[in-house]
Length: 156
Image (cartoon, rainbow, N blue to C red; front, top):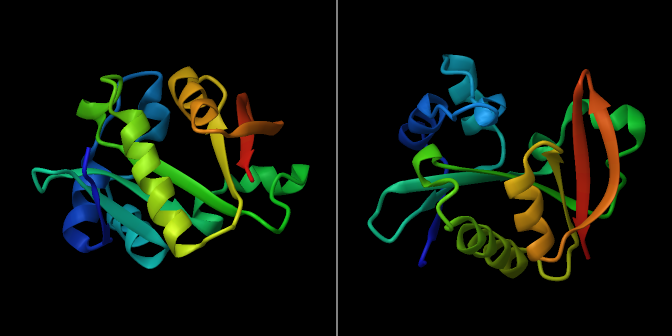
């Protein structure tokens, strides 16, 4: 799957905040509001464009990819680039995730050679956890935000 990484713009951001995932993945639904669009526009978010020119997903790096509650558990030590991502709901669960994720990793490794990556995923998201393990990420720790358990995974 040939994917293109593009800078986030208002058109992409407006589409992303309108995406709605089915339960239990609705946990990842964005705020369909000016604030939700602003978040995508003002932080290091990028659009992922498919071979047909359509928006297939997005990713972010840095603090935007962290779950704030993780700070109090020491989840985010220096030395890693945090990565967060999302795929268009209609494409999830159809076998596209690995190619999608590898395209993002390849892009970032080209931009940031030799830098280790870290991501945080809700523990109930078995599909994503399997995908990240398949891509070489290993569990570093777990923490809770309310009743939701999160797994911090790293790849050196």
